[in-house]
Length: 136
Image 1 (cartoon, helix red, strand yellow):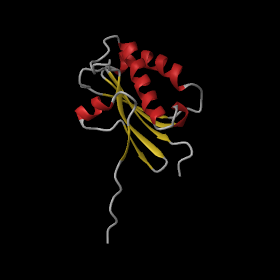
Image 2 (image 1 turned 90 degrees about the vertical axis):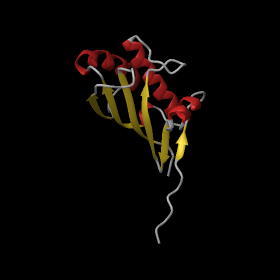
Image 3 (image 1 turned 180 degrees about the vertical axis):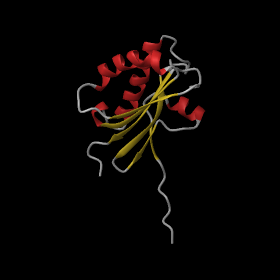
Image 4 (image 1 turned 30 degrees about the horizontal axis):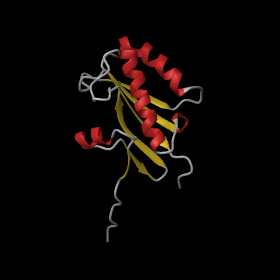
């Protein structure tokens, strides 16, 4: 007999649940000792894109930090990163500048950067997998 799947253990940062409900996805899902964080973008409080690219990237990292914190994690717990860029060649230096302020020193997490043509009005998105400290 097949075992029933457990319900998803969703994580939401404070004050942003309505945005996730509107778009019908979770900010992150806990599974065992791993946290799978949905793509985070540099959205202003109303959900619109921050127009300044460096500020948009910094805001995406801040949104990611809030999701990690809601699950009891920090950037030190991040093991895998995927970023999406609408113009990778032109954006790379700016993304790396923000990344260096946030991620810190080696050892660094895995990182995959993907060039895309559409991000719903945004120019950068970041998603991660993190290990949850103290989880079984």
